[in-house]
Length: 271
Image (cartoon, rainbow, N blue to C red; front, top):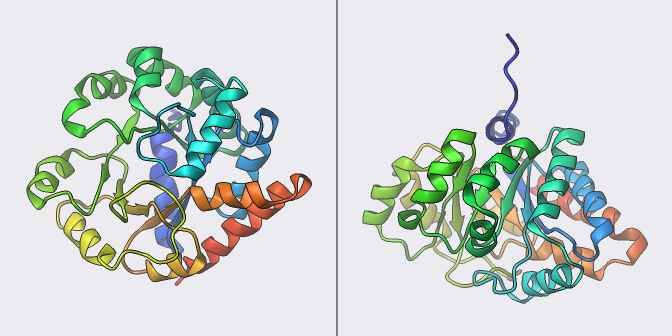
Protein backbone atom coordinates (compact mmCIF):
# COMPACT_ATOMS: atom_id res chain seq x y z
CA UNK A 1 0.00 0.00 0.00
CA UNK A 2 1.38 3.42 -0.96
CA UNK A 3 1.41 5.96 1.85
CA UNK A 4 0.76 9.50 0.66
CA UNK A 5 3.48 11.96 1.63
CA UNK A 6 2.05 14.72 3.81
CA UNK A 7 3.41 18.18 4.39
CA UNK A 8 4.46 17.21 7.91
CA UNK A 9 6.41 14.28 6.47
CA UNK A 10 8.18 16.63 4.07
CA UNK A 11 9.30 18.83 6.98
CA UNK A 12 10.48 15.78 8.95
CA UNK A 13 12.31 14.54 5.87
CA UNK A 14 13.95 17.96 5.36
CA UNK A 15 15.42 18.00 8.87
CA UNK A 16 16.51 14.36 8.58
CA UNK A 17 18.31 15.10 5.34
CA UNK A 18 20.09 18.09 6.85
CA UNK A 19 21.09 16.03 9.88
CA UNK A 20 22.47 13.22 7.69
CA UNK A 21 24.44 15.78 5.69
CA UNK A 22 25.79 17.31 8.92
CA UNK A 23 24.49 20.79 8.22
CA UNK A 24 21.93 23.23 9.42
CA UNK A 25 18.54 23.15 7.76
CA UNK A 26 17.76 26.38 5.93
CA UNK A 27 14.25 27.85 6.22
CA UNK A 28 13.45 30.79 3.94
CA UNK A 29 10.54 33.15 4.48
CA UNK A 30 9.09 35.13 1.58
CA UNK A 31 5.93 37.25 1.57
CA UNK A 32 3.52 35.95 -1.04
CA UNK A 33 2.87 38.64 -3.65
CA UNK A 34 6.04 40.62 -3.01
CA UNK A 35 7.46 42.44 -4.88
CA UNK A 36 4.57 41.62 -7.20
CA UNK A 37 2.00 38.90 -7.69
CA UNK A 38 3.68 37.23 -10.66
CA UNK A 39 7.15 36.85 -9.14
CA UNK A 40 6.38 34.68 -6.10
CA UNK A 41 6.66 31.34 -7.88
CA UNK A 42 10.04 32.14 -9.43
CA UNK A 43 11.39 33.37 -6.08
CA UNK A 44 10.24 30.26 -4.23
CA UNK A 45 11.90 28.05 -6.83
CA UNK A 46 15.06 30.15 -6.60
CA UNK A 47 15.17 29.71 -2.82
CA UNK A 48 14.89 25.94 -3.25
CA UNK A 49 17.57 25.95 -5.93
CA UNK A 50 19.83 27.83 -3.53
CA UNK A 51 19.44 25.14 -0.88
CA UNK A 52 16.36 26.02 1.14
CA UNK A 53 15.02 22.97 2.97
CA UNK A 54 11.73 24.49 4.11
CA UNK A 55 9.77 27.43 2.71
CA UNK A 56 7.75 29.76 4.91
CA UNK A 57 5.13 31.52 2.81
CA UNK A 58 4.22 34.80 4.47
CA UNK A 59 0.51 35.60 4.42
CA UNK A 60 0.29 39.40 4.12
CA UNK A 61 -1.55 41.10 6.96
CA UNK A 62 -2.19 44.75 7.77
CA UNK A 63 -1.02 44.58 11.41
CA UNK A 64 1.93 42.15 11.59
CA UNK A 65 2.87 42.64 15.25
CA UNK A 66 6.00 40.48 15.19
CA UNK A 67 7.44 41.92 12.01
CA UNK A 68 9.82 44.81 11.44
CA UNK A 69 9.77 47.34 8.64
CA UNK A 70 11.03 45.01 5.90
CA UNK A 71 8.22 42.47 6.23
CA UNK A 72 5.69 45.22 7.01
CA UNK A 73 6.48 46.93 3.70
CA UNK A 74 6.36 43.64 1.84
CA UNK A 75 2.97 42.89 3.36
CA UNK A 76 1.66 46.34 2.46
CA UNK A 77 2.76 45.90 -1.15
CA UNK A 78 1.21 42.45 -1.34
CA UNK A 79 -2.07 43.66 0.14
CA UNK A 80 -2.18 46.53 -2.35
CA UNK A 81 -1.89 43.88 -5.07
CA UNK A 82 -4.92 42.12 -3.62
CA UNK A 83 -3.12 39.02 -2.33
CA UNK A 84 -5.40 36.84 -0.20
CA UNK A 85 -4.98 33.75 1.94
CA UNK A 86 -6.49 31.79 -0.92
CA UNK A 87 -3.69 33.07 -3.19
CA UNK A 88 -1.13 31.94 -0.61
CA UNK A 89 -2.59 28.45 -0.53
CA UNK A 90 -2.52 28.35 -4.33
CA UNK A 91 1.17 29.37 -4.42
CA UNK A 92 1.90 26.76 -1.77
CA UNK A 93 0.16 24.00 -3.69
CA UNK A 94 2.07 24.85 -6.85
CA UNK A 95 5.53 24.64 -5.25
CA UNK A 96 4.64 21.60 -3.13
CA UNK A 97 3.51 19.52 -6.06
CA UNK A 98 6.00 20.90 -8.57
CA UNK A 99 9.08 20.53 -6.34
CA UNK A 100 7.93 18.17 -3.56
CA UNK A 101 8.79 21.04 -1.21
CA UNK A 102 8.26 21.31 2.53
CA UNK A 103 6.07 24.38 2.99
CA UNK A 104 4.51 26.22 5.93
CA UNK A 105 2.29 29.27 5.98
CA UNK A 106 3.39 32.02 8.36
CA UNK A 107 0.71 34.52 9.21
CA UNK A 108 -1.52 36.04 11.84
CA UNK A 109 -4.61 34.89 13.66
CA UNK A 110 -7.20 37.20 12.11
CA UNK A 111 -6.92 36.08 8.46
CA UNK A 112 -6.84 32.42 9.54
CA UNK A 113 -9.84 32.89 11.83
CA UNK A 114 -11.77 34.76 9.16
CA UNK A 115 -11.09 31.96 6.67
CA UNK A 116 -12.20 29.46 9.28
CA UNK A 117 -9.86 27.03 11.03
CA UNK A 118 -11.70 23.99 9.64
CA UNK A 119 -11.64 25.45 6.14
CA UNK A 120 -7.94 26.29 6.52
CA UNK A 121 -7.15 22.78 7.67
CA UNK A 122 -8.97 21.22 4.72
CA UNK A 123 -7.49 23.64 2.17
CA UNK A 124 -4.03 23.38 3.70
CA UNK A 125 -4.07 19.60 3.52
CA UNK A 126 -5.20 19.72 -0.12
CA UNK A 127 -2.38 22.19 -0.85
CA UNK A 128 0.15 19.86 0.77
CA UNK A 129 1.43 22.34 3.33
CA UNK A 130 2.86 21.09 6.63
CA UNK A 131 1.03 23.61 8.77
CA UNK A 132 1.28 27.15 10.05
CA UNK A 133 3.37 29.48 12.19
CA UNK A 134 1.19 32.05 13.95
CA UNK A 135 3.27 34.57 15.91
CA UNK A 136 0.31 36.20 17.66
CA UNK A 137 -1.36 32.98 18.81
CA UNK A 138 0.06 31.73 22.14
CA UNK A 139 0.02 27.97 22.57
CA UNK A 140 -2.32 28.40 25.53
CA UNK A 141 -4.94 29.93 23.17
CA UNK A 142 -4.58 27.59 20.21
CA UNK A 143 -6.99 24.78 21.17
CA UNK A 144 -9.52 25.59 18.44
CA UNK A 145 -6.90 25.74 15.70
CA UNK A 146 -5.13 22.64 17.02
CA UNK A 147 -8.38 20.66 17.02
CA UNK A 148 -9.08 21.59 13.41
CA UNK A 149 -5.52 20.82 12.33
CA UNK A 150 -5.20 17.51 14.18
CA UNK A 151 -7.65 15.67 11.96
CA UNK A 152 -5.95 17.06 8.84
CA UNK A 153 -2.46 16.06 10.01
CA UNK A 154 -1.22 19.65 9.98
CA UNK A 155 1.25 21.26 12.39
CA UNK A 156 1.17 24.50 14.37
CA UNK A 157 4.74 25.53 15.02
CA UNK A 158 5.28 27.38 18.29
CA UNK A 159 7.64 30.30 18.73
CA UNK A 160 9.56 30.87 21.95
CA UNK A 161 11.59 33.91 22.95
CA UNK A 162 14.59 34.37 25.25
CA UNK A 163 12.14 35.79 27.77
CA UNK A 164 10.12 32.56 27.91
CA UNK A 165 10.55 31.16 31.44
CA UNK A 166 11.67 27.58 31.99
CA UNK A 167 8.35 26.73 33.64
CA UNK A 168 6.46 27.62 30.45
CA UNK A 169 8.94 25.69 28.29
CA UNK A 170 8.50 22.63 30.51
CA UNK A 171 4.72 22.89 30.27
CA UNK A 172 4.38 23.48 26.53
CA UNK A 173 7.31 21.87 24.73
CA UNK A 174 6.20 18.26 25.36
CA UNK A 175 3.18 19.07 23.18
CA UNK A 176 5.20 20.66 20.35
CA UNK A 177 5.30 18.98 16.97
CA UNK A 178 7.45 19.31 13.87
CA UNK A 179 10.15 21.61 15.19
CA UNK A 180 10.59 24.41 17.69
CA UNK A 181 11.09 27.97 16.48
CA UNK A 182 13.38 29.99 18.77
CA UNK A 183 13.25 33.75 18.36
CA UNK A 184 16.85 34.86 18.70
CA UNK A 185 16.10 38.23 20.23
CA UNK A 186 13.50 40.24 22.08
CA UNK A 187 12.06 42.36 19.30
CA UNK A 188 10.54 42.19 15.84
CA UNK A 189 11.86 40.55 12.69
CA UNK A 190 14.56 42.28 10.72
CA UNK A 191 18.16 41.84 9.65
CA UNK A 192 20.66 42.50 12.45
CA UNK A 193 24.43 43.02 12.39
CA UNK A 194 25.13 40.56 15.22
CA UNK A 195 23.45 37.68 16.97
CA UNK A 196 22.28 38.12 20.53
CA UNK A 197 24.87 37.01 23.06
CA UNK A 198 22.48 34.65 24.82
CA UNK A 199 21.34 32.57 21.82
CA UNK A 200 23.30 29.46 22.82
CA UNK A 201 22.06 29.64 26.41
CA UNK A 202 18.49 30.11 25.21
CA UNK A 203 18.65 27.18 22.77
CA UNK A 204 20.14 25.05 25.54
CA UNK A 205 17.19 25.85 27.81
CA UNK A 206 14.76 24.86 25.05
CA UNK A 207 16.64 21.69 24.14
CA UNK A 208 16.41 20.52 27.74
CA UNK A 209 12.68 20.06 27.21
CA UNK A 210 12.41 18.62 23.69
CA UNK A 211 14.05 16.27 21.23
CA UNK A 212 12.52 18.09 18.24
CA UNK A 213 14.75 20.04 15.84
CA UNK A 214 15.36 23.62 16.97
CA UNK A 215 15.34 26.48 14.47
CA UNK A 216 16.68 29.93 15.29
CA UNK A 217 15.09 32.86 13.49
CA UNK A 218 14.62 36.64 13.69
CA UNK A 219 17.70 38.69 12.92
CA UNK A 220 19.58 36.04 10.90
CA UNK A 221 21.01 37.85 7.90
CA UNK A 222 24.56 36.72 7.03
CA UNK A 223 26.58 33.55 6.44
CA UNK A 224 28.55 34.50 9.56
CA UNK A 225 25.37 34.30 11.63
CA UNK A 226 24.64 30.85 10.21
CA UNK A 227 28.18 29.65 10.83
CA UNK A 228 27.98 30.84 14.44
CA UNK A 229 24.89 28.68 15.00
CA UNK A 230 26.51 25.43 13.87
CA UNK A 231 26.55 23.04 16.79
CA UNK A 232 23.90 25.11 18.59
CA UNK A 233 20.73 24.92 16.49
CA UNK A 234 19.42 22.38 13.97
CA UNK A 235 18.29 25.01 11.50
CA UNK A 236 18.03 28.71 10.81
CA UNK A 237 15.17 30.80 9.44
CA UNK A 238 15.84 33.87 7.33
CA UNK A 239 13.15 36.30 6.20
CA UNK A 240 13.87 40.02 6.19
CA UNK A 241 17.37 39.59 4.79
CA UNK A 242 16.00 37.46 1.94
CA UNK A 243 13.36 40.08 1.17
CA UNK A 244 16.04 42.79 1.26
CA UNK A 245 18.05 40.85 -1.32
CA UNK A 246 15.00 40.69 -3.59
CA UNK A 247 14.22 44.37 -3.05
CA UNK A 248 17.74 45.55 -3.80
CA UNK A 249 18.35 43.41 -6.90
CA UNK A 250 17.55 44.58 -10.42
CA UNK A 251 14.18 43.19 -11.46
CA UNK A 252 15.62 40.72 -13.94
CA UNK A 253 18.17 39.41 -11.40
CA UNK A 254 15.89 38.96 -8.41
CA UNK A 255 15.61 35.14 -8.58
CA UNK A 256 19.33 34.74 -9.23
CA UNK A 257 20.24 37.12 -6.41
CA UNK A 258 18.01 35.24 -3.99
CA UNK A 259 19.37 31.86 -5.09
CA UNK A 260 22.93 33.06 -4.59
CA UNK A 261 22.12 34.50 -1.14
CA UNK A 262 20.43 31.31 0.05
CA UNK A 263 23.33 29.26 -1.31
CA UNK A 264 25.75 31.37 0.74
CA UNK A 265 23.74 30.63 3.89
CA UNK A 266 23.51 26.93 3.06
CA UNK A 267 27.28 26.73 2.56
CA UNK A 268 27.86 28.43 5.91
CA UNK A 269 25.64 25.86 7.61
CA UNK A 270 27.81 22.91 6.61
CA UNK A 271 30.25 21.58 9.14
